[in-house]
Image 1 (cartoon, rainbow, N blue to C red):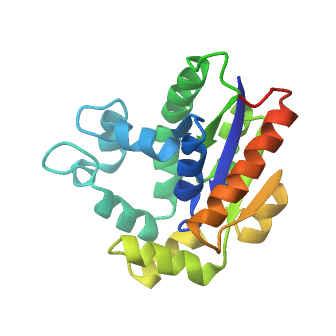
Image 2: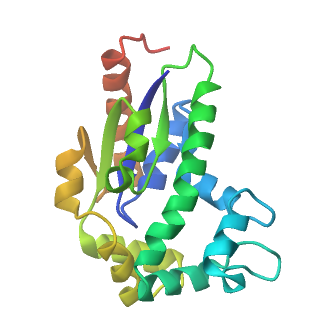
Length: 204
């Protein structure tokens, strides 16, 4: 099974591109969704999170208090590394198992990893990498439109991520996301055909 890693900064449009791949019948494994599963009440990551961060890190229902954690990480940068040390090995294990269980006749699958190059852990799983890129002001506008985060908070998150220039340099392919949904579908269709050829498979 070939694995294509998709990455990009916050608000770059990774999800829109992933949805376009899904429309072509390609499985997308989203590490953000896996992290969300791992931080629900009674999930595998919560005991270690509580042990490291205390009860302030959990909500009344036992799930991770994401607002508290985001604020804590902003004021205590080492907390981000601590959280990643807890979550990333568990996410990696889940992702590897999901990849293993993909049907052999499928051409390839997508592994969406926001911090693909920052952490490097998930690079072991992929054969090809795609960075989704757009102008910084578009990133901020998109995140503000879908969340309650302020521009200051968005910029704080962006500051913890690799720069666009670095990310694009590391990626095997860069797809720009400054157009319409139709543009995304066209770009993904072209990349899909390229990947089928690259992996020496015939388009069904």
